[in-house]
Image 1 (tube, rainbow, N blue to C red):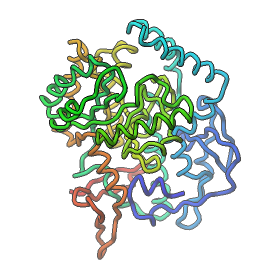
Image 2 (image 1 turned 120 degrees about the vertical axis):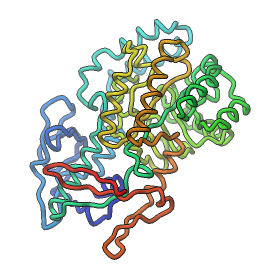
Image 3 (image 1 turned 90 degrees about the horizontal axis):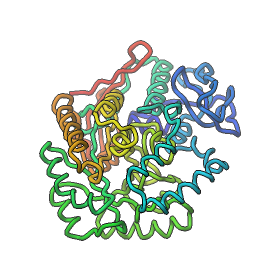
Image 4 (image 1 turned 60 degrees about the vertical axis):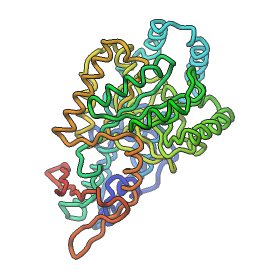
Length: 447
C-alpha cells in the first residue's frame, strides 16, 4: 500500500504507514478523496460510480488512525496505478460505441494519405466535439497523482505527530522543475527541415529529442541519425510506419514490436513514442526500450482519450514513462486555432506548481511556415527565461531517463541525526523537506 508514496518522494519507509480499513469491493469505480481529488479503483466504504461527472462518494471521511498508522478505505498504490496506467478508461474500450469509433478510425487512416490537411482538420474537430465538457482528467493539466500523494503524506505526518519529512528532491541539483522538448518527424518535408529546426533550438541553447519513423514516408539513413547526434540531440523511434494501427490487435502488435525493437538496436535508440499517441500500456512488456513518451497527461484533444493524471515520470514495468504534459503544436495551431503562448504558459505554470515535468511535442512538419515558427521561437525564449530566472532543468529525454532511474534507487540514511542521500548519482541529488503548514504541505530544498 505504501509503494507509490515512497517511490514518489523517495522518503524513508517509516514515514508512510498505511493499512487497509475493511475489505475492498469487487467492482472498481470513481470516488473522491476530499473535495477536488477524483480517484478510480476499489474501495472498502461508500459507493463507486462508472462516471466521473456524477455525484461521487468522499472516502476521506472514512479515514481513521490506529496509533501512528493511517487506516485507509482503499489501496493508494492501486489507485495511483489505475490513473498512471489509464485503467479508468478501460471500461470504454469494449462498448459498442468504441467499436464503432474503431471502425471509423480504421477508415480514416486508409483515406488519410489522400486527404488535404484542411479536410483532416474537419474530421478531427468532429471527433473532438464536446471535449470541453469532459471533467476528468482535469483540463488543461491534471495533477491528481501529486495531490493524492500530498494528502497521504500529510495524513501520515499528522498521525505520527511530525511536522517535517525528509525526501530526495525530484530533480538534480535542486532544479525547481524540468523541461523537455521533443520533435516528431512525420514526413519528408519535416525531415528536410530538421537541420534548420536544430539551428533554431541551438540559438536558444536548448537541445531536443527527435523521433523518427523507421518505415515511414522518408528514408532514415545512418548519416541522418549521426548528424542529429553529433549536434547533441537525442534520437528515438516513433512507431513503425505511422499508420495508426500499431495497437489494433495483440498478434499484429507483437510482430511490429519485434521490428521496432530491431530498429531501436540499429539506431542505438533508448526511447520510443507511438504514432498519434495511440497506446496500450498492458502490452509494453514486448518493447525493448529504456523509456517511452506516448502517454498524455490529459488526452482530451487526442484521438485516444484518457491521460495519466501526473506530471512526473513513472515506471511501466521496466520502462520509464516520460509523459507528455502540454498540448501538441498540431492540436494548438490546427484544432484550437490558437497561435499564441497562452495555453502553453498556463500549462507550464500549473505543472511548475507541482515541481513537475513540462514536456512538449513540436513537429518540424508543422512549424515551417513563419506564423507557427514565430510562436515556437517565442516558446523557446520563454523556456530560456524560465531556466535563467527559476532554475528549471532543461533536459533531453535520455537525460531524464538516466536521472529518474538513478533517483529510484537512492535512499535516505540517518547518520548521527543527519539525513544523507546514498546511491549512484547521489552527488547531483538534493535533500528536501516536506513541512506541514496548516492543512497543506510546503517543500524546502536544502542548499
